[in-house]
Length: 347
Image (tube, rainbow, N blue to C red):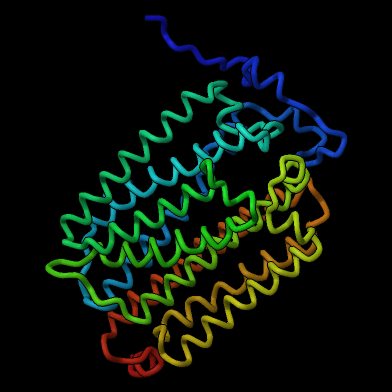
């Protein structure tokens, strides 16, 4: 049997090379993009910072379980984290595969398919990793005696499927952000909360629901900002992302309103005590990060050589905000029935 070979010297296979078209309006990369090292392209392809979209829902869900019950399992936390990371690798790899099929990634040098040179190998690997990740999640759900959690996680994975995979490809219709919100917000975060149960399924309180909404909100902001630098390529293949419809000027205003809305929502939830006061205080402390996202997008939305970094600003906000949310719930449980202002006064 002939061994499978990968063209690692020339990242584009012959088929890819035939499809590669550089358009006059291609501006998704800097003028010197050709000189970017292969190591840099591989780092971009790995998208390591993006895996906070797995870390934060699990951390917030676990912290919510600790807030509600005073119990948590670090063993389940790490098994769930490893399994959900594999699911997210499937999302990224299969997205590269299907964007390659439509031509959306024809000029995207950090596409895994373009780097490896084999669509089939990437496609098979993606689905193997999804199977392994889902098996891990089912095992934890069985240990937690929580059928609802696996149903919610199945819904999250299905949202990822219809987002990118044929025949649906709903991301091409501009509804990727709502799907991202649902998958990484309510579906995943509430499921990870339920996976911390010991003897019976945990009740789902308004606090748990609202924290999952906040996680989904910051997750979908990452996806929204990832479209700024690839509007031309999206238009060329008929991918109608929100920014294709809105343009970068209006898109920058949407980012500003979204970030302001995020903090006003936290403030309101803290005032009515749906969120513990500790969450309110810790989340408000992340305001400078929110301001940096708004400032960067407003200043650079027309500069296609810089706006590429907007999604990483959002990743930073998503991560630190999520950590603040989780830490607030842990601190609130440590003080039990005391509200934070009273606890600090007594301290």
